[in-house]
Image (cartoon, rainbow, N blue to C red; front, side, top):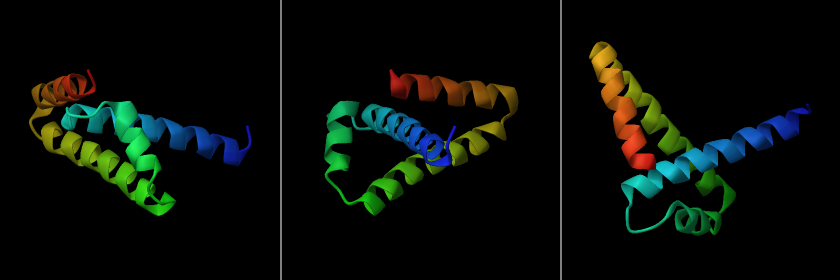
Length: 84
Protein backbone atom coordinates (compact mmCIF):
# COMPACT_ATOMS: atom_id res chain seq x y z
CA UNK A 1 0.00 0.00 0.00
CA UNK A 2 1.37 3.38 -0.92
CA UNK A 3 2.07 5.93 1.77
CA UNK A 4 -0.33 8.59 0.45
CA UNK A 5 -3.13 6.02 0.23
CA UNK A 6 -2.47 4.88 3.79
CA UNK A 7 -2.41 8.43 5.17
CA UNK A 8 -5.52 9.31 3.19
CA UNK A 9 -7.43 6.40 4.67
CA UNK A 10 -6.16 7.18 8.19
CA UNK A 11 -7.24 10.80 7.73
CA UNK A 12 -10.73 9.76 6.60
CA UNK A 13 -11.07 7.43 9.60
CA UNK A 14 -9.90 10.15 11.99
CA UNK A 15 -12.40 12.61 10.47
CA UNK A 16 -15.23 10.08 10.79
CA UNK A 17 -14.44 9.48 14.47
CA UNK A 18 -14.09 13.19 15.23
CA UNK A 19 -17.40 14.03 13.57
CA UNK A 20 -19.18 11.20 15.38
CA UNK A 21 -17.88 12.48 18.72
CA UNK A 22 -18.79 16.08 17.86
CA UNK A 23 -22.24 14.90 16.78
CA UNK A 24 -22.71 13.39 20.23
CA UNK A 25 -21.52 16.51 22.02
CA UNK A 26 -23.43 18.97 19.81
CA UNK A 27 -26.81 17.23 19.66
CA UNK A 28 -28.32 20.00 17.54
CA UNK A 29 -26.45 18.79 14.44
CA UNK A 30 -25.99 15.32 13.00
CA UNK A 31 -22.45 14.09 12.26
CA UNK A 32 -23.18 14.59 8.54
CA UNK A 33 -24.15 18.23 9.11
CA UNK A 34 -21.04 18.78 11.19
CA UNK A 35 -18.91 17.21 8.48
CA UNK A 36 -20.50 19.49 5.90
CA UNK A 37 -19.89 22.59 8.04
CA UNK A 38 -16.29 21.66 8.80
CA UNK A 39 -15.62 20.77 5.15
CA UNK A 40 -16.36 24.37 4.19
CA UNK A 41 -13.42 25.56 6.30
CA UNK A 42 -9.82 25.73 5.07
CA UNK A 43 -7.73 22.56 5.30
CA UNK A 44 -5.61 23.67 8.24
CA UNK A 45 -8.71 24.50 10.32
CA UNK A 46 -10.16 21.09 9.52
CA UNK A 47 -6.93 19.48 10.70
CA UNK A 48 -6.98 21.52 13.91
CA UNK A 49 -10.58 20.50 14.65
CA UNK A 50 -9.94 16.79 14.02
CA UNK A 51 -6.68 16.74 15.99
CA UNK A 52 -8.27 18.65 18.89
CA UNK A 53 -11.14 16.16 19.17
CA UNK A 54 -8.79 13.17 19.00
CA UNK A 55 -6.44 14.79 21.55
CA UNK A 56 -9.41 15.36 23.88
CA UNK A 57 -10.25 11.66 23.54
CA UNK A 58 -6.66 10.72 24.36
CA UNK A 59 -6.42 12.99 27.40
CA UNK A 60 -9.87 11.92 28.58
CA UNK A 61 -8.84 8.28 28.38
CA UNK A 62 -5.65 9.00 30.33
CA UNK A 63 -7.61 10.87 32.98
CA UNK A 64 -10.12 8.06 33.39
CA UNK A 65 -7.33 5.46 33.31
CA UNK A 66 -6.06 6.88 36.59
CA UNK A 67 -9.14 5.34 38.20
CA UNK A 68 -8.14 1.89 36.97
CA UNK A 69 -10.31 -0.59 35.16
CA UNK A 70 -13.54 0.97 36.43
CA UNK A 71 -12.40 4.36 35.13
CA UNK A 72 -11.68 2.97 31.69
CA UNK A 73 -15.06 1.24 31.62
CA UNK A 74 -16.73 4.54 32.49
CA UNK A 75 -14.74 6.25 29.72
CA UNK A 76 -15.81 3.63 27.18
CA UNK A 77 -19.42 4.03 28.32
CA UNK A 78 -19.22 7.81 27.82
CA UNK A 79 -17.74 7.37 24.33
CA UNK A 80 -20.44 4.86 23.39
CA UNK A 81 -23.16 7.22 24.59
CA UNK A 82 -21.63 10.11 22.64
CA UNK A 83 -21.31 8.16 19.41
CA UNK A 84 -24.76 6.63 19.69
